[in-house]
Image (tube, rainbow over all chains, first blue to last red; front, side, top):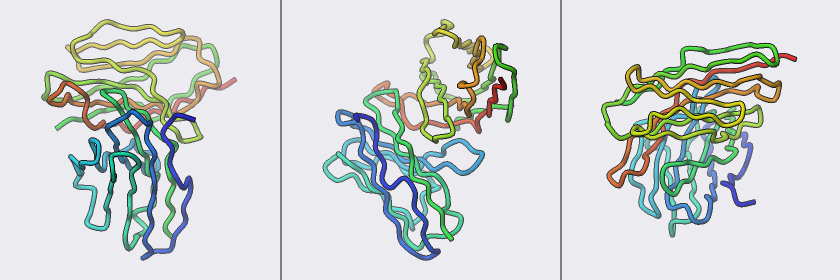
Amino acid sequence: DTGVSQDPRHKITKRGQNVTFRCDPISEHNRLYWYRQTLGQGPEFLTYFQNEAQLEKSRLLSDRFSAERPKGSFSTLEIQRTEQGDSAMYLCASSLWDQAFFGQGTRLTVV
Amino acid sequence: AQKVTQAQTEISVVEKEDVTLDCVYETRDTTYYLFWYKQPPSGELVFLIRRNSFDEQNEISGRYSWNFQKSTSSFNFTITASQVVDSAVYFCALSEGGLSGSARQLTFGSGTQLTVLP
């Protein structure tokens, strides 16, 4: 499968725990994006990488969130000290120019 | 700041009816891109179409057609002869052009839930 891959697909965690998600973009794509989608809403931009450089971060990305893209390949999104409000679908997308391809997302439930 | 408005929260039609999904956008950039994505119950966002701000030609692809009008800042999407498999949430999105002309991050509308009844 040559699409965008995200792992895990589902994560249930207790409030206060740390979680990490992984995204593997399409191999030749140099741009990688993270979005968050809550129920009934469209995805909201979190952060963007071009190769290994994190070029933009949304104000939605609080200090508890951190993203990395070592070597410009896969990316990880970590949430520290999770809160119930972090429950959402976390979507990863990659692009070469102006067409973004999305993964199936990681659904996080904080209990 | 950029904004995308999809005023229709839910639409329900009977199979074989035509349906139009509305999208209105706001941006200060002269270079931008507009997109439609489909999100079936499985959750994955499926790309449908991309238009850039310099190309106002309407487009038809099979049962899908798009009407882009800069004068009214609208980019509407029509499905002809709808089918049950078209049932999904449809998102309109906007991306302002980056320095190199490539798109930056997407701003999505809140989506329209389309239900096609048999």
